[in-house]
Length: 68
Image 1 (cartoon, rainbow, N blue to C red):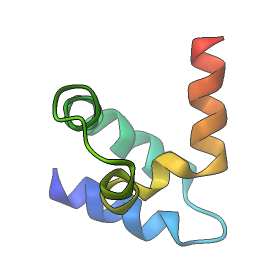
Image 2: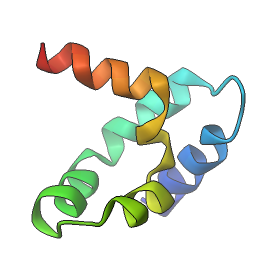
Image 3: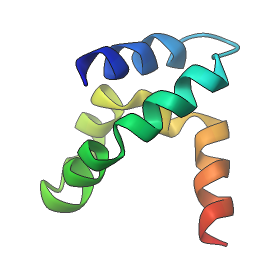
């Protein structure tokens, strides 16, 4: 799990993240992210620190498309 988190952190700072790697890691960490957000009520500041790729424009658009 930690490998996926570190990969996503590394990709989040790149100007062109590897979307394939990010997508794979996002799929692998879904349940952990869901628990952090829905069960543990993680603060936004902690969320940004642990899961910075969630705030990436591509990820926000992807989530919006899934909901709409």
